[in-house]
Length: 46
Length: 168
Image 1 (cartoon, helix red, strand yellow):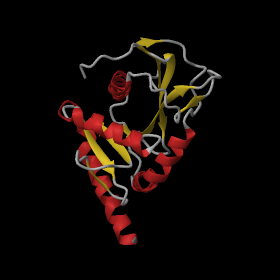
Image 2 (cartoon, each protein chain N blue to C red):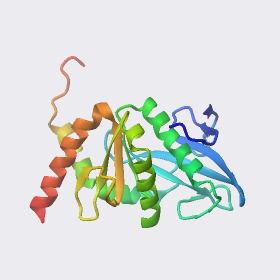
Image 3 (cartoon, chains in turn yellow, brown):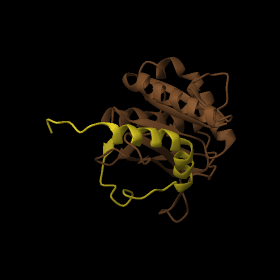
Image 4 (cartoon, rainbow over the protein chains, first blue to last red):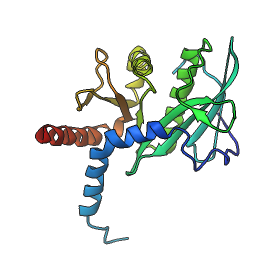
């Protein structure tokens, strides 16, 4: 593995169809995680 | 995994990987990307070939370059590298067609013991529920995460199964 400047490929979605499918299938998991985030009180130490 | 694989490049944040497949059809650039899916620590694995424009990538191209085992081993290596960098990540993977998804399933099955040393894998069935990966079954997508996140993710998926079942 070699690290190189790939900025021309970053910040883009190259396979949007797969991402759309992922979003559809994962919608319940996303909703569940967002719900947990909303109900979790903020850390009083932060 | 100790299979032959291609040398590959990645960016500093290890979200994009690129390598070149070499075979009877020549040299074909391949791209693997990890894109966040609207929630903490869930990423979609995108994978495909460079199109003729060399700017656009296409997940539907079937290059048939005679090196599918080496290509999949390289993609698998990127999963290890990505989750080394993002250990909490859950990665969703699917083929662009049913037959490709079946190819992924066969490849997972072949290396299941080794994969399970570090990961847990779940499958999303075509009848809309999640289960722990069963090598005898076909799935629409696969979701994997490092072992240490497995229990928590499985609890979430079981909750979702209940919600879906209740809604039916």
